[in-house]
Image (cartoon, rainbow, N blue to C red; front, side, top):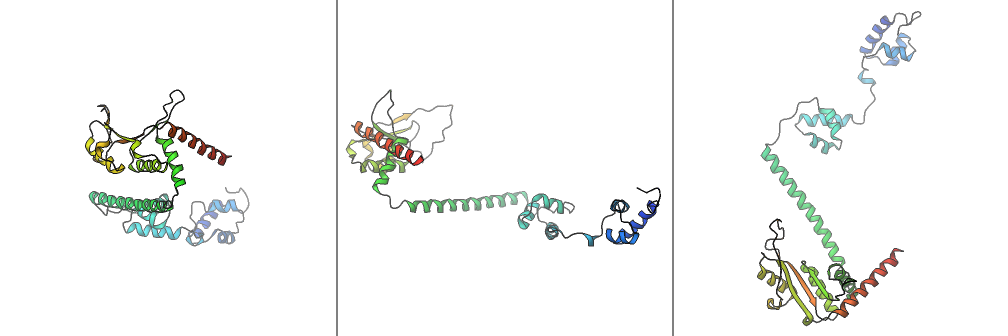
Length: 286
């Protein structure tokens, strides 16, 4: 960069002076004034490779975080712990402390697994408590349901879970099947609201052939408040040896089928009620 003539001709001499001043703690502005070098390109080349003195550095908002991260690392903290403590990114932590020695593990692998399991257990318990509060609040919102609301719920419930006639196969029978005791009880309450006598209802258990059928009858008899002898012969599902059953154990009771005798009129009313609910929903969507 030395100019063939003029004051920049002795570039190497100027560089020696500039480097000496730089190492003495001079800023670029001070070197400019000292050497009378007003060309910025020339000035930068004169001090190329020499770091600026610390006092000329602009303060960095993360300097305090960096210092704290290094302090924590020297105390044996992990990257994840430092990240959580300081609220910064893991990449920043790595950049700040990667030159420091890796701390010795604070726990054995067995202790780490135990701590992890305890943490997971606390997290699951907290999550379950949150779900419990949500369910409790929602439950309180439905404490004062009217018969009109039960009526609409029953129509929707039947249309979702009950047997339906096809245009090519008009059976017109009210048949309802479900494995959820609450759903069955809600359906029975709806039939009671409609004035359907229990004498018109038939009950049959639909269950896997290898299950405890007597226990299932006892379970459903308590749910619907009838004598176990009142059940019709159960419908058994054959076992497929190629599949692995998940519906096993003492909590498996199969499904309960509730059939209403002489229910053609009831079924057609259900169709009409449902079409009315759909028409109302369609009007809301317009």
